[in-house]
Image 1 (spheres, helix red, strand yellow):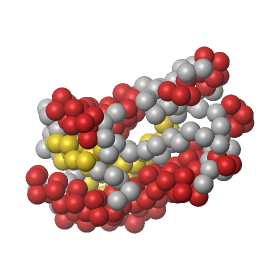
Image 2 (cartoon, rainbow, N blue to C red; image 1 turned 120 degrees about the horizontal axis):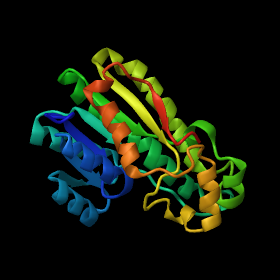
Image 3 (cartoon, rainbow, N blue to C red; image 1 turned 60 degrees about the vertical axis):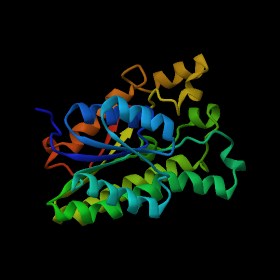
Image 4 (cartoon, rainbow, N blue to C red; image 1 turned 90 degrees about the horizontal axis):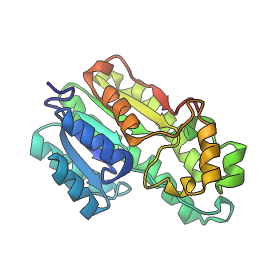
Length: 252
């Protein structure tokens, strides 16, 4: 028996990194996984490997969200789990970024999370409830420290912590608003994790060593460690957990 037997799950950004780890683990635990990503070839490859269904998706496109939800219901008759995982890390000088660059980060993180929840919640409510897991960040809880500002091109104008902090508050507010429908809304707040999106930060050995030292557990995280936390929140084992924004950050 898998922990997600007979559950239907949509996982965004499933072609690589945390999304691929989530999709793989959820499928292993019995879920019918709908894996979405803007990267069609990579997404289809993962889906084929784990027996999931791939759907191409730009998560900032509101109309595409409606289609994804409808296609999922047509395929499986319901939706039990949504993992709003898709994300980006823009590399550059935040103080000189354009408004369009700022809005892109906000859209990929905040807008997409809002759209996913907005169109999933009515479907979940019709069948008695569900679980939404949003991917925030420990940086959405504490902001970037001085080391990151000095060494990683981050500053108080960087939209990444702004957008992830927004996901934290969205999670809390939606948990209160939709608990009456037995819909749980929680967030994971990872520390620094080895993924294709973060390899640039880890390429310099001195920066990597300093980042490791910022985590009291003494190392950086792995995608599988975020996936196991997502599995818990998605499963019935977390049936009394909602509105939680859980750091999975090695103590960062």
